Amino acid sequence: MLRESSLAENAPLDLSALRDRTKDPLVPGGATLLALVDAALLGTASDLNRARSAMVTELGHDALVDAAAVFATFAMMNRVAEGTGIPVGKGRLASTADLRAEAGLDAIRHDG
Amino acid sequence: MLHFDRLTTDHNVRSDIAETFEREWKSLRRPGSHFSSHEKIQVCERARRTRAGDSTEDGLADVTRRVVDTIAARPATIRKPWVEDVTANLPMPGYVESVSLVSRIAAIDAFHDVLGIARPELPDAGPGNPTGEFNPVAAPSKAYVPMTRGASIWWALTLVPEAYARMEDLHCVLYLSPEQMQQPGSPRALTRPQMEVLASRTSFLNECFY
Image (cartoon, rainbow over the protein chains, first blue to last red):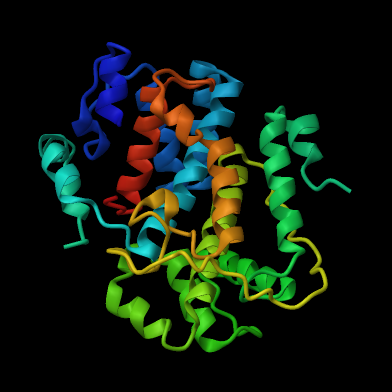
């Protein structure tokens, strides 16, 4: 979906930034969004305060609220996917092989 | 009466988000399929404590504690044999209801945490016994749990109608509806690529391959 939406909006995208935080995902505000996720999952309260302020400065308060909402959705859906064991179909695995390699996502595969 | 008014009045949060959280709190005051309202709230309390590293004993059955702790804090460790093991003692509707409850409270807490807003206190329990309701159409699938329409993340919780409906409500308001997901563009303050970069990094750090 990420690559499709990027293509649909004719926006550049570096998927490797999803695993390598020294890189910029090239999506407008992308580095700030990734910093918010990292602060929420890996950082301290101070890190999260800084990330929140950067979001408001760069993208605005409404974007911060929607970022919190997206983050919350995936806190939920990741648990639903793991708890119910939703498989990734063979077709989808084949069609996303290049993307997964670029983003380094096979490192977290455990459905096999 | 409303627990979440302060989100809109004090924190300038979209009213539809406050409203879906309000519906969530009302649902916690109703009995579920396998759990009473009191037990649903115990599950949510347990999930919150477990994510904070507190494994204090409580009134939940051992198997329920095991399920809640794992979904709350170690979801990426879940495998089919583990689910088969726990569902030998916890009926499958109870397992699905647990997945839904623990996942939903994780979402609501995460939303508050990211915005730096204190997490809401859980509601007082409402009356009534578990309904025993489940969808008889749900069938074994390639996933770990029965569901309708084949193994899809969207239908993952359909064995228990309320567990599915609450997840759907939160997903549609916090993220997008299935119809919106099929369309290009975004009705939110973030563009679709921005939303999906954020979602992808979150899933990556949560070690969720799906």
